[in-house]
Amino acid sequence: MPLFEQLDLSLPTGPSLVVLGRDFALEAKAREMLQQLDATELARAIHVEWNARLFSAAGRADFRRKLVSLNPRLREHDALEIDRTLRHELAHLLAQFRAGRRRVPPHGTEWRKACRDLGIGDESRCHTLPFPIQRRTRRFLYRCPRCGKDFPRVHRIKRAIACLECCRKFNRGKFYRRAQLRLVEPEP
Ligand SMILES: [Zn+2]
Ligand SMILES: [Zn+2]
Figure 1 (cartoon, rainbow, N blue to C red):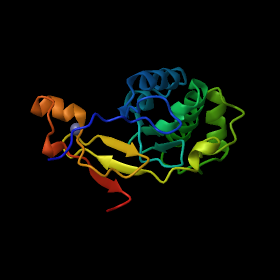
Figure 2 (cartoon, rainbow, N blue to C red; figure 1 turned 60 degrees about the vertical axis):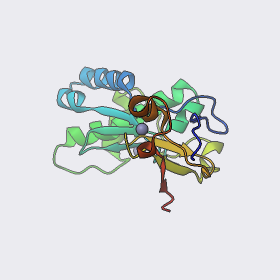
Figure 3 (cartoon, helix red, strand yellow; figure 1 turned 120 degrees about the horizontal axis):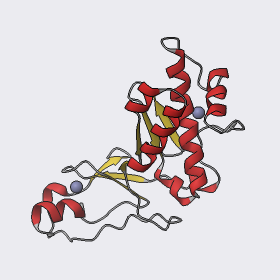
Figure 4 (cartoon, rainbow, N blue to C red; figure 1 turned 90 degrees about the horizontal axis):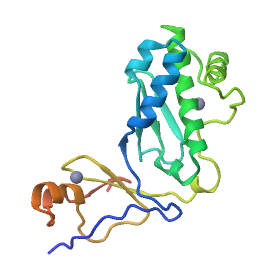
């Protein structure tokens, strides 16, 4: 009989729950910044998400999907760090948006111009997370097969464990086998 345990997502150094998925507040902020720069189409399409699969990168920008992904571990730092990473990644999208079909180099002139327009003219660093936290993470990534939510863990999970939200939703809070977390990274 598998044990049912309330998932606690706190990381060793991080105090808080790691919330994954889209972040509508950051998305609204991104939209506003882009609108002010007359990148209306991009503003309309922009998505911002927290993605636990970014192991050492602070963020990532996907122009095709108009998507900025942020590493949940950024939350261990202050809001400024989140803001700066958001702008850094937006600058990638903005630079490519302005260039149209021409491909722009990742941290070239166009990107630097976009950084200035987004208020981070002094941006020089790249995507790696600031200081110690990037090292210790050979984390395990589990996923709920029912809702698809990701659960990053520091240690391997030895017992059967299920996604609390799905257990509540589909099985009145009792262990729900179809929401039993599966290891996705490293591949089992
Ligand atoms: Zn970059
Ligand atoms: Zn679930």
